[in-house]
View 1: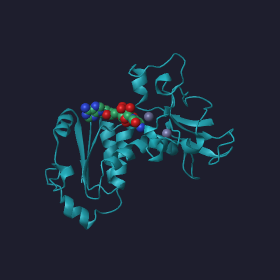
View 2: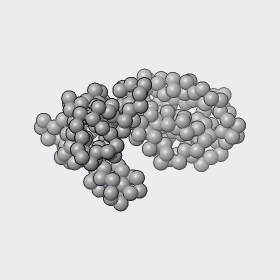
View 3: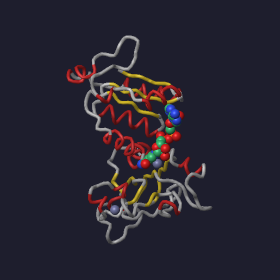
View 4: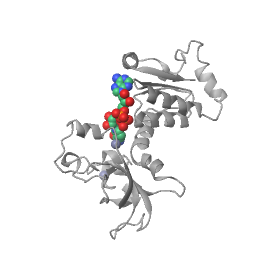
Length: 235
Ligand SMILES: NC(=O)c1ccc[n+]([C@@H]2O[C@H](COP(=O)([O-])OP(=O)(O)OC[C@H]3O[C@@H](n4cnc5c(N)ncnc54)[C@H](O)[C@@H]3O)[C@@H](O)[C@H]2O)c1
Ligand SMILES: [Zn+2]
Ligand SMILES: [Zn+2]
């Protein structure tokens, strides 16, 4: 692939701070959009000339986990730009990148979607969405998102898309809290009746809604983190 856009992720900090060892000269980068310039004979789902986005990880497509579509748990998973520790796959902060298992790893970018927006699909939005799906968020639920980096901000949007009744977003960075609130202000639909019944109206003092759903019960870890950060609350 010829790279048109690549991103820097919070995960790159793990490499920067030495929590994941990185060999000298190894190329970083696991968020990327670009054009297919050559393809092996087994590549059937994308073709030379296609504008594509890449997933941060490659998977074999055949193992136990891949057959369950848990591709991130693939026994042969390799993460772009994470050194030998995570598969020795060179990253995408480069002019070109070599993409194994391209049928699984790449997706065509729909016309009209910018490279910068498409960049989010292969890592941060996928991760935020996966977290919200994994939490079984149902319409009307109260959702707490801890940490509002790109992943947390995507989780806020995913929770909103899945119909969360109230989202409590926690961070210490004012700009990130403000962005989480902006996503909520863009909410175009009124809460459904079902959602109101389950969540009630937020109290006037803005305290979290004491909804009857189990997910709304404050946990010890929630209050501990919130005491260090600032909560942006949106009805
Ligand atoms: N697929 C994956 O597994 C995947 C993909 C992307 C990122 N990640 C991981 O997700 C995490 C977040 O990524 P990111 O790019 O959003 O990172 P980021 O560093 O940009 O954001 C993290 C945010 O958490 C906030 N934070 C930290 N401690 C806090 C606390 N105690 N209370 C409140 N807020 C706190 C920080 O202020 C920051 O805004 C990273 O650990 C990253 O490695 C995993
Ligand atoms: Zn990442
Ligand atoms: Zn696999």
